[in-house]
Amino acid sequence: MKIIIHGGFFSESDQSTDTKIAKQTSLKSIVEKSFEFLKSNSSYDTVAYAVSLLENNDLFNAGIGSQIQSDGVIRMSAAIMDGTSQKLSGVINIENVKNPIFVAKALEKEDDRVLGDSGAKNYATKHGFVDFSTEIPQRRSEYNSKLKTGGKGTVGAVAIDKNGKLAVATSTGGKGFEIPGRISDSATVAGNYANQFCAVSCTGVGEDIVSNATAAKIVTRVTDGMTLKNAFEKTFEELKQIDGFAGAIGIDKNANVYHFDSYPTMVFASYDGEKFIIFE
Ligand code: ASP
Image 1 (cartoon, rainbow, N blue to C red):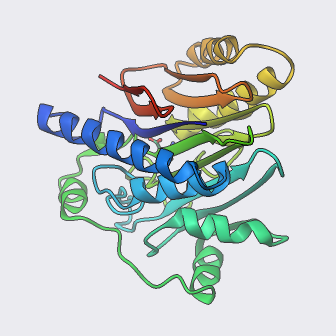
Image 2 (cartoon, protein in one colour; image 1 turned 90 degrees about the horizontal axis):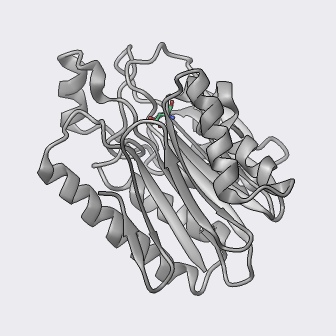
């Protein structure tokens, strides 16, 4: 059993030491709680749980604390994928729900598993997800002062459970200041992908992650026999050729855990019941 989570990039608007410590502390506590949960639950349920805790924490750009788009509206995206069933389900540009990841998870049982915009929100309402504003004052003041540096945040979790099953979940408030209608990588196979060999979640500039097909490439390379580390390194070498800005976390079927970023610094934490590894 192992779990690794990320909270996007540290290049958020507030890069103070206090924020850094707060992020390290939050990630440690969330990864520990999630590992506890993993002891008696599947990796699939655990990644949703871990991402919901990250969404509930306004230090991270997903759920509460999401970025605001150029027209002043928050639109969030999230996806979850079970490595065993290989079903990805997700929501794109959903508004006014507390936990987009739970709406994404609810869609797993549907034939139409990825819904966007009002379709996603209507589905959520129909299935009992109440209206919830995820806006916090800090994001509104960043928006009002047109502080475009706020982006580069997303949250994600990858886990392997006691049965060796892998799963991944990812959730984002986007880059901030997007043209309404812009699609994030987080609910695509470039940003969130798993099979029985490997599972990967990404953060960074969605356009770069999609252009590089990052998560799907890493997973495919591991499936075809490459080590997790080599698959990450080759894929990030390719990302470098387009000067891509991204980070990713992953676990393979042998419970190897890896993370990589093309620019400093992705914030992450992993735990295996004995040892925490936390970004510095
Ligand atoms: N990947 C997210 C997006 O482009 C944002 C991020 O991770 O910073 O929408």
